Length: 303
Image (cartoon, rainbow, N blue to C red; front, top):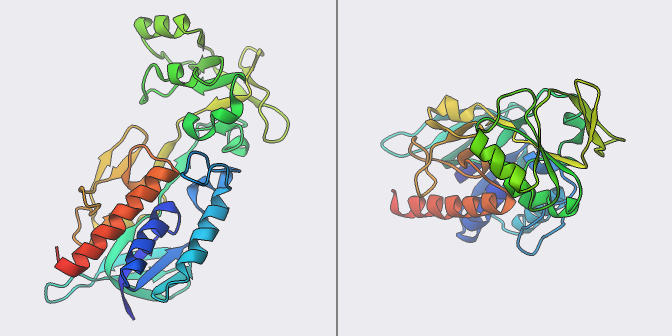
């Protein structure tokens, strides 16, 4: 069966796109491995009407609602290859799955997201999404007025610690790099931000909790939560296989899309973290909604 749309990645962006296409009575196949980027977080915050809900529950509930539409199909698998197969001027795509199955569609949405490359510091990985965090709007409230840390990121805003300080007393860890210039440092100190220039040896705390940052000189700087900016990379090579163009973002490459969420390859759309320099669950969902509507309009009008 040739679907109207095939969606690779069934989290916030992919499911939001699928809902628009399903309600337009189009045949949709969602292929997903069941490992969304935010699976490490106990709760998703700031999402309209869903504040505090575990992200995996939000995805499961959305899938259940989508399955009420008879034109929607889910396949729990990974996509290992994708290629264009259109003929006579009509767009089309075939994807090969890791279970040996092949699927085809008229339009293709890449919403498989990105993977986070964490700094090489002992203790970060096991605390990711628990006490090592990336977004203060997503998780800052839960650590309000407690001791916060920010790992300096050379590609990020030099005064980002001013933002983190809205939630609590903040220490900016330079980890033995040069860090912001004298003017920015003065602004940080005026706001009460402590600047710790030394090299980090590792994070300390019971289980996934964080008690402090151990420095190379043996000191333990008390910290209850650490904000870091992970380097991101696409979670799948499919976009490169298809020839989609990327742009350099502040944290990693971002798949290039136009205002209608279509990539540089006709018929291939992208939404969510893969196609956004900065994102969260709400933005990813909105991005997917736009992609779904755009794909449907393209199916109708052929543009």
